Image 1 (spheres, rainbow, N blue to C red):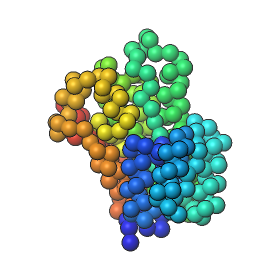
Image 2 (tube, rainbow, N blue to C red):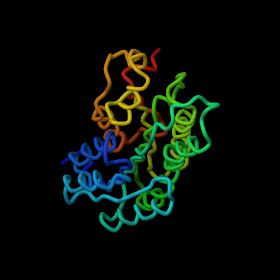
Image 3 (cartoon, helix red, strand yellow):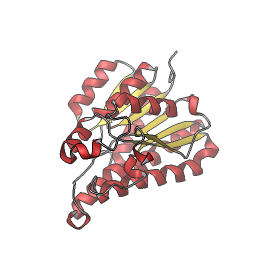
Image 4 (cartoon, one colour):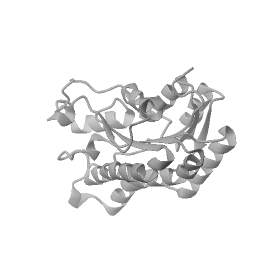
Amino acid sequence: MGRLAGKVAIITGAARGMGESHARTFAREGARLILTDLNVEKGQALAREIGEAAIFVDHDVTKPDQWAAVIDAAVSRFGTIDILVNNAGILGPMANTVDLTDAGYQQVCAINQHSVFYGMQAVLPTMVKANRGSIVNISSIAGMAANYGFPSLAYVASKFAVRGMTKATAMEYGRYNIRVNSVHPGFIQTPMMVEATDEVGGEALAQIPLGRIADPVEVSNLVLFLASDESSYITASEHLVDAGMLAH
């Protein structure tokens, strides 16, 4: 029996990067999965690879009506929802505050922040009915401390907001045995982060005490723990996976 045997999990941004790693990790531990993304080709391929325990939903996380469709698909296929991993996110434009466009700011906040609100709002009624649930919101070390020049104000603002929304929701729904935690990764070997580190160069990498970028599974292992019953007394808290970067 796996650590998530019998549990049903929604993972957003599941087609690649950390989301794909979370999906593979959860599948190995016995979860049934609803994988969502706008990358239909890769998302469908991953669901097919996992097999009958996974379905893929073409999903824009910034659209509340599409969240309703995801919930309907999950309940219709698997009967309930035990876990939500709000993983979808973007870095957005690398721009100084005065150069950041309104469109760029709004896009980053819509994907990184508003989608977390929509996701929690959509899944909570099902979790309340079941009197259980674990929500894991993927933030960033940029949700704990800003760093000049990387990334932009929009990214930092959105990731700080995720941290606050996590705590507020955890406080409100703990009485229903629903736990809500945030995860704050540092530099992770994903397509999004590789593009960013190529832009900012070795100066950012030099800030990592362990001297390397993490494999996505090193984040997935923590997400797995928070999703599982092993973390049954942990809620409203933030969890760093940063190789000591914020120890400076």
